[in-house]
Image (cartoon, rainbow, N blue to C red; front, side, top):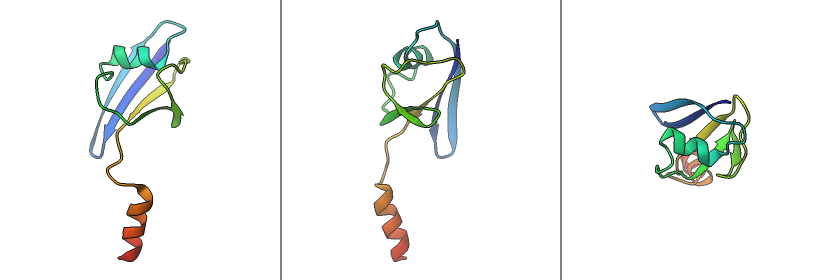
Length: 82
């Protein structure tokens, strides 16, 4: 089955398209993509939180999410203060 693994930064991204066997999980996709050793805060499939044990389906997009630099609520408060 074909899946895509993406990791992104503010001004660039990396994308790898993989052909994995049926029954593969997120951990398999990360290992095959080379992104398994990268520090990441979370993983999502099409924007929905996932774990390393989440089963994959054909044409899934696995997103390696980077850690937040600041809490979004704090950032919003700072912008509102001016």
